Length: 213
Image 1: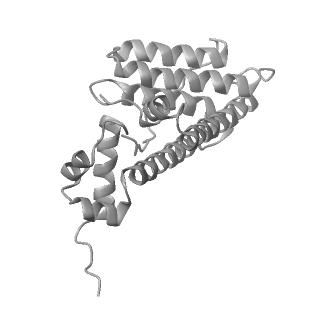
Image 2 (image 1 turned 30 degrees about the vertical axis):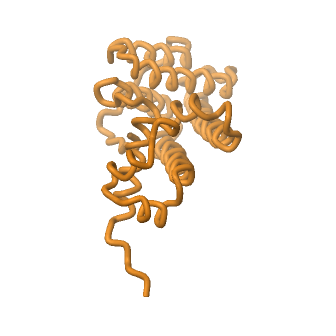
Image 3 (image 1 turned 120 degrees about the vertical axis):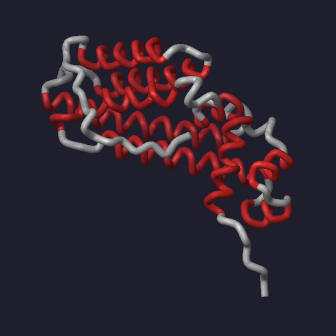
């Protein structure tokens, strides 16, 4: 009879993620992972596969969570679509400061490190960015129906601009840019959606749940 594993796989998976987020793929050794998880190499391999399998599993799970987060955060009626986009931008700012998130966005880091040499990673990243873009575009269409964004504007172009601004905030936050500077980017992004004439709603009464690192 096989001996049952005496560890929580969810907790170990989180430890593996924290290590990969901190040091990326190439700079993470099996020794780093055994130290981070407290498990021996055999136990790690038996439960999660080799280093490459661990990384792909971690990256795929992260991409899924990023998409689940935006689905949750942008869900709602037409009348509050612009407010939800604004609140989402505020969350990106809050999560992107070097103090709170010194290692930056795992999706962005992995894309920069591996996309040029790993077609599977490149495709997974592209699929994730496109899925995020589609959700943002849907919210922009909602805001257009509500009269908060010009109905003649191309929602896809605005969504790509907004997504690029959010990704930029995440990257620049890692460099040490202040929260005030990052917030100015978010404000400009919302202004670009509304032509700088639409209201910037306050959704402080709604609690957003974040699972990302």
